[in-house]
Structure formats: C-alpha cells, structure tokens
Length: 564
Image (cartoon, rainbow, N blue to C red; front, top):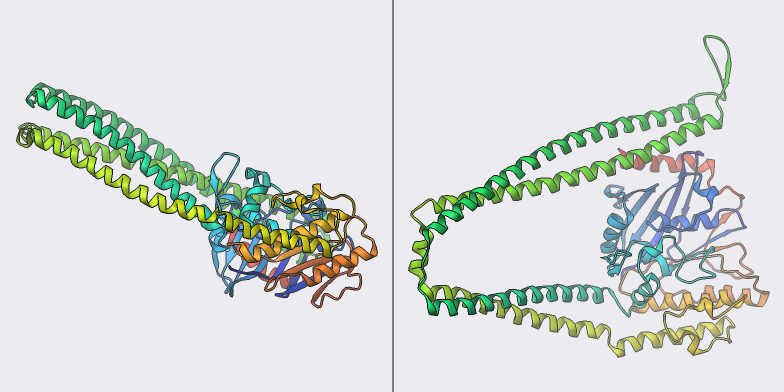
C-alpha cells in the first residue's frame, strides 16, 4: 500500500492581493481557530487542490483563490497547482509533468494509476470508468458541513456514479480491491472473444456442410460472365469511394481553416490576459491612490474598485481562454478522425484497384479454383473450423482460471475476515465513545447508514466510531493509496463536557499507525494532541497581505506556465 503525505499548501488570491502558506507535520497537525477564522476553508482547499469538490462558503469562493499543494507519495515529492478549472502537476524539481482541463476524463485516470486507485464504477450512462479523485479521498475526509449528519457525503457531484455509496464502501473496505475489477475486466474480454469465435465457428460449420453437400452433387465450374459482372461491381464501388474521398478532403480543408481561426483567437485572448495582468500590477504597485491628469489637472481615484474590475476581466479572459483551448482540442480531434477515415477510404480504393488488376488477367481466379479442386475448398474450411475450436478451448480455459481468481476475492472466508474486523472495531469504538444504544444488528451490514440509527448528540459520536473503524479497516485491507485523515470540527450537536472529552481523547489515541492526520478544532477542551499547531486568529481573513509576495513569487510563475 502506498502512503500519501501532505507537506504544504499555498493559497493565493490575485484579486485581493492576499495569500496563505501552511506547512503540515507528517504525523499530525492541528488547525486551531475560532469560528469564521477560515480553518474549514483551509482544510477544504487540501482535497480541492487534488480535484475533489468540497462545499466552500460563497465569501471564500468570491476571492478566486488558486492553490498549490505539495505532497509526498512513498518518498517521491510532487506538487499540484489548481487555478480554477485548470490543473498543473509537477515533479520534485517543480518541472511541469502534465496539465489537465478535465477532472473526470483526464486527471481522474492519471491519478488512478499514480495512487493505485483503479476500480471500475458505472456512471449514469452505464459506462464503466475509473472514478474521479473525490471517490478516493471520500472516506478520509470528515467535513464539518455534511459528514456529521450523513456518511460518505463530504464532496459535491458524487451522484455522477451510480450507487456510489455502496460501490465506494465495497472498494475501500477491501471486499472488492483493485484486483477484483481488473480480473472482472479480463473475464469480460475473454467472454467477448469466446462469443465472437463461437459465432464464426457456427457460421463456418454451416458453410462447410453446404459446401460438402453441393460439391458431392456437381462439378466446380466458373462462369466467365460472372467475372465480368464482378468487375463492373468493383468499378462502381471504386467510383463511390473516390467521391467519398473527395468529400473527406473538403471537410478536412474546412476543419483546418477552423483550427487556424481558433489559434488566432487564443493568441488574442492570451495577449489580453497579459495586458490585464500588467494593468493590474501597474495600478496596484506603480500608481498612487490619487492620479492627476497632466493635461487638465483633474484628479482621479485609483481605488480598489477599479483594480477589482481589472482582476475580474483577467479571470473572465482566462475562462474564455480555457474554453477556446477546449474547442480547439475538439477540432483537432475531429481532424484526426477525418484523417483516419480518409486513410481508410484511400486504402480501400487501393485494394479494389489491386483486385481489378488481378482480374484483368486471363481469369486467374478460375485457374486457381480449377487447380485446387474440391478437396482444397473443403480443406480450407475444415482447417479454419479446427483453428476456431482451438481458440475456444484456450480462451475458455483462461476464463475458467480468472473465474476462480475472482471467486477468491468474493470468497466467504475473505469477506468474513473483513466483516469480523469491521464489527470488532465498531463495537470497541462505540463503547469508547459511550454509545450503548446500538446493537450489533444495527451495524451488521457494512453499508449501514449509521446516521439513521442514532439521533441528537449521540449521532456525531456514532459517526466518529464508524469513520475511525473505516480508517483502520482501510489500513489493513485497502489496495489503493492511504491518504491523510482530515477531520473538521468534531464537536457537534452541543455535546456535554463529559462526551466532548471522550471525543477529543478518542481522536487523540486512535489514529492508525503510519498515517497523517489534519484536525480542525475551535477548542481542544484541555486535550494535549502533542502535535504541530497552526493558529488562525483573524476573523474573515484566512488570507493575509503579508504572505502575498512570498507565495506569489512561486505560484504566479507556475500559473503563467499553465495558461501560456
């Protein structure tokens, strides 16, 4: 199992000229601050930078924050920059490895390989896909807004996967690990080969029977007139393909023209962004608060509102640039498709021309058939029938091996081991958190919605027991990367002093070994978490002007490298 550790996050708002830089301990970090000091926004930004979608408050969203997250994966250091819808992924030297404009289609599959997260879940179109990063991080993040009332709902847009809750539980618990899905995919491939081979074999058997019957009754003769007819048919098909070839060439011409148009628009928008950036920098740094007109002597205010408008224009231009690049990529894909179609048609024209050249001889096909005789025809079909039978046998054996392998993942013993661990930890953790109303039957199924079994102040404690059970369960049985445990504001539903003490003590002493925890608290209630503490003291101002220059020096260079 790989281990992911978060080392640092940088947040930057060019709109407000503010930033924040926070470094995390590899074992445990406490984000400590009263309400409205920004601890939840800071915590949400961690997995947001990695492509998930937490629920941010509108005030924080309006700052147009970009995030640079640095992390370590099994000793190798990486960083990822998220700027709106655009992602840049960098190696330990800050060199751009790859950039992404789509989480589901681009970032998700890439992270699937990197983090060894490769289940195959069905989306709403019934397509099997490697799910986006949110489904990897889902059980590791306890969000203050939703996780204390509903389990497995700490991110938005999760409904794009059918029955995502149960599918995620079966995967992360280890009941269906990566190998389960890869094995199932292999089995499906063998099934497809077997079905196609079986169809061909049945058709071959039918033709062979008909050939044997007809050859036993008549001599094999070739009608010269039929050859003339074949040539006419081939010439007609050739003309049709040539017309199609000309149509494809015209379409390609139009697409190349459209591609050039998009490239011109992209260059114009890039220049506009550069100019807006220069204007904003000039207005923010070089101009005084009051600017006098050298001609008439009138004075004009260089206010935040004017600079804000420039920043908004820059963001809109960036969004437009991203959309134009996407459109250009679509046109490029169309060009490749049309080129492939043209290549196919051209090859088909060449093939027909070759056949025509052969048939223009002295009816060579007639000579071949005359020389081959009846036994040669039967031999060809018989050999093919035997080949198909061998293919069926070989693939059926391979499928049988994979069926046994899949059954091993679904075996009662393996599932019982996982469920016994789940029940044991759940029972133990419920007792530690003073929950005695739940019976073993209440959480017998691993997919049980614990939140439906408890109400009031008992519900958050029951959910803590459930979440920590999964933290330990994944450590022992999961096949994907183990991610940082992020817990935000566990004091919910007005816990009394005795129970809030139990919650803090439980969190402090039940963190799985070799894991990283990031904990957000307004109060520690006297519990010593013996870890690095990040203090947030200023209300409504997570980002600070004093941090802007340091963070901007690193992030703006990376941003410009992504956009240009």
